[in-house]
Length: 124
Image 1 (cartoon, rainbow, N blue to C red):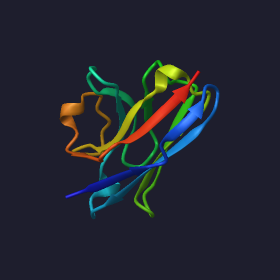
Image 2: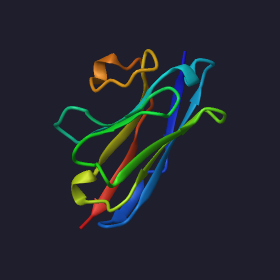
Image 3: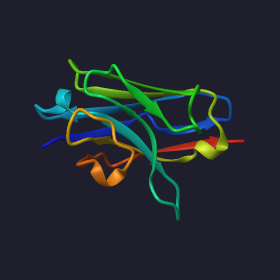
């Protein structure tokens, strides 16, 4: 079992930055890849970024490449999402998720555990 709790969302102006945190509990955290997804009303949850179990590999959606950075701390059981140069279209509820193993997946259905989400609102 892995429990995930996100924090760090809020309201920011376009061009600003936010850092999201995801605190994980459970002994298997360091064996799992982690992902960040986001969802806006009426749309499906979309993949934003993922990081493998050791932090050596990362993947990003094209829409956030060069602006967002994912990293993890396996000692503290934390995953972070640093978001820079935010745009109004980044407005969404952001979720962290734990994969079934150390590999990164794009499909949300393959992630076993989810946090409750944190709202990010970017004003123009």
